[in-house]
Amino acid sequence: MSTESEHGQKNASTLSLREAAQLLSAEGLGVHEGETLLASAIQRGELHADVMRWATEQWDGRHLPGNINARQTRIERADFDVWRSRRAAG
Figure (cartoon, rainbow, N blue to C red):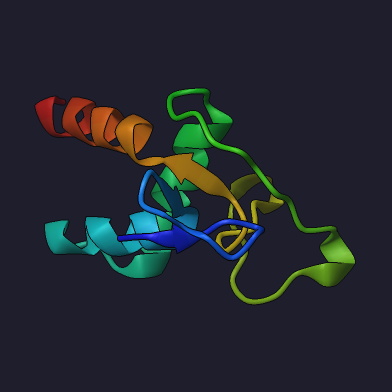
């Protein structure tokens, strides 16, 4: 999955938290469930991310741990893949 940088260029090396959650849906998770799982992993320091947070009065949609913004939080694809494989090994 590719994403656009702030300059409008495609970047295949990063995912939004929402895009990463959509990849987890192949494991039988709903998108919001995946977003919550990823946000919790970020909060615990298990998954590195460039985190964007909502101010409480700006919240749009269902809440995630730490008021993490699922659309603007960026995760390096390599970090996501490592986290996902650790999770699968369990």
